[in-house]
Length: 324
Image 1 (cartoon, rainbow, N blue to C red):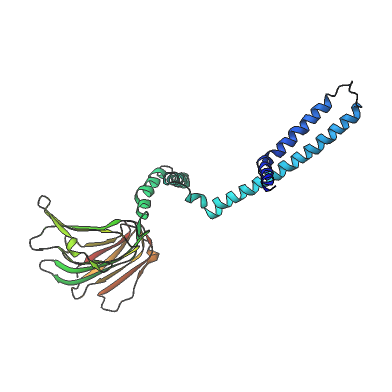
Image 2 (image 1 turned 60 degrees about the horizontal axis):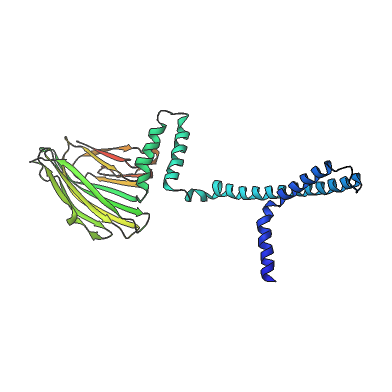
């Protein structure tokens, strides 16, 4: 008995979506039959027509009503689908990388094409090629740069200072492997001597000073201090880097603090010490409303700036050293 009932219910479930159309088809057939009843029929023609038309009307009404109920059901399905699209955004997660890129590309182009049709494609390409790839694996937070001037020789115009750099790298997953690297290039100067010395480099309290290398370019008369460390196995990496630098203020008065990734704000400290030098700060790609300078005591030898906004790759602060 149970298997027979299951068979009936399964059969009904399969044919139930077609019931409205079946009723409509039967109703049309009955109307057609009643319209063409032969006059020689042994049954009273008018009575038989009335019966056929009544049955056809009942089936037509039932078919229309069933179709209406079915449309209401589809409207409910459509409403649920629209909620997923407009509210829950579940459909976005189902898109492939190429489909998502194509969708965003069209949105960006459409959004700016009315006002700036000539740059809409370049803007879209720049976002997809330069910005979005730099969000695919990690971003920065807690970015700090401390510049402490140690000494300044007026005769040689040589400034020696310590650059302490702190950074938190936030990975999307502990399984993602990516490099932490940097490269400093500077011109050779016999009087200046060694322009940069890596004094400290730790990542999650592990020392990587020995990983750095120095490359000399005799043709361009320059040297490069570089280091690359492969990171994996964690979602947060605390980076501390300290470099002792020497520079001629007249030749190179600019010190830049820019981010190569998206960064959740940044802070900059400058301590000119007893050198008598001063500094000016110029924001790059940063709204000055979100650039806060901390109050300092007189005479001014300590400066501190805080950037309270999300910074894009290439944004940052430029320090310009000024002689007394």
